[in-house]
Picture 1 (spheres, rainbow, N blue to C red):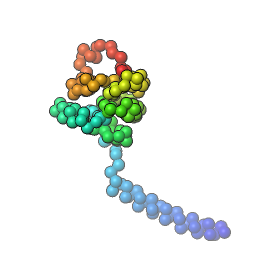
Picture 2: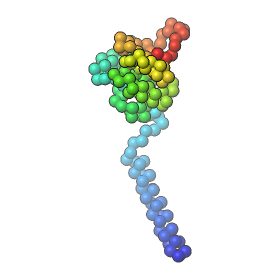
Picture 3: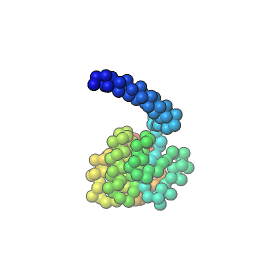
Picture 4: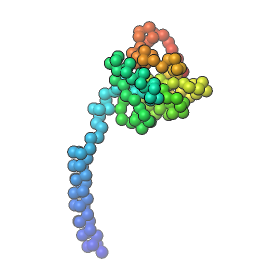
Length: 161
């Protein structure tokens, strides 16, 4: 019995070592995993919004030489770092989810949220987002939040909604 255990151990250890070596070689040469270098360089703006709103905001931000990326779902938040994130969809619960996940993943990120229902204002504040009304969804407002002027920095303002 002990001899059988010794033979099986002697056979499986080299086979396992050989398989792990092949797996390591495959992962090294064939799959591009995100490195620390790609995650260290933050993009300027990430927008979670409806297509119509994206068509108006994205070209204006690119004209101002601001790197912008549209987020289609909460899964897209896992890959990169952003300086400012906008949850500007028509669904408040989806916006709250994006705000909460964004603040958890990127604590120093500025988060703007479109407030569709006034009942959710306190929830947005708890998630660390600044609420915007429909009239405030402009390229100029996003640029102002991304690069605040000196007068805006001197003024004491409530960071919530």
